[in-house]
Image (cartoon, rainbow, N blue to C red):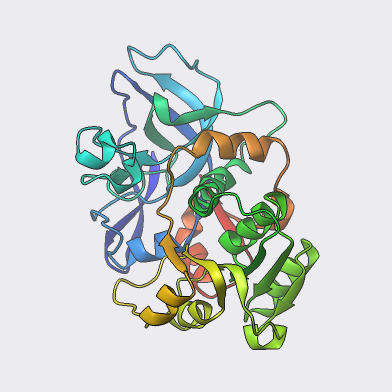
Length: 329
């Protein structure tokens, strides 16, 4: 099979590998489409706990082409989207139901081969069957949506909240769409990329701006979400949280990034600072939301490139071009 391999930090190669075989409780998926996101850029730099060399691709969907000996839930020909999460099910955090914090946490496309290939092996338990009306080529959006659903699980119900989202990339726009559906009174978006800011406006946010200063809200916002991972945006966002409000670190920052907090203000104004890590009990719910039409794939997927253009796709993504970029084997 043809596959992309990240051989070492900064080194991508298209190569030919042996077709994979499934274990007893695994399936082989013929990959239809595989998304690229910010985590892939971190993997390309040798970060995010990646084990290089690796076939990347943790956002993918396709058709089941082979079954393990003990698989009964799926059949060859079923179309599925795949949750990339791999947990040990033995450590303290797994036993507490916090698998996303697993001491030995792995992921398809991060620590083991993923979906940037013609075929990928996945545990049958990680596969969500797609309904007939969902296009397999759009279904890579389910994985990032499941991360956004997890983010709102962390935030909890906060009806009537005024929300500020930093970043109008794929994840920021997904946080916007979920905020609109979880009872927010208003959702403002800050983004320095004019095209992405325009997309946020078209999706129906309350206000858009290239800086929170332009929004003139001195009391701050009840919920502030960073979907950029940018240290300057994070620092600014921490200053914008209203009394009794919550700051959610949702974007993936550089490992060395830092921000300064004001402990007295956090105490005195009862401000909550929290984070959301990947997927947790949210993938199938995201698949259901996606099937319901919560996202318009035509808005979110702006580039579809052949697998052999994977390196170009990562460069385009890193430059801020478009929204979601997918490669197709």
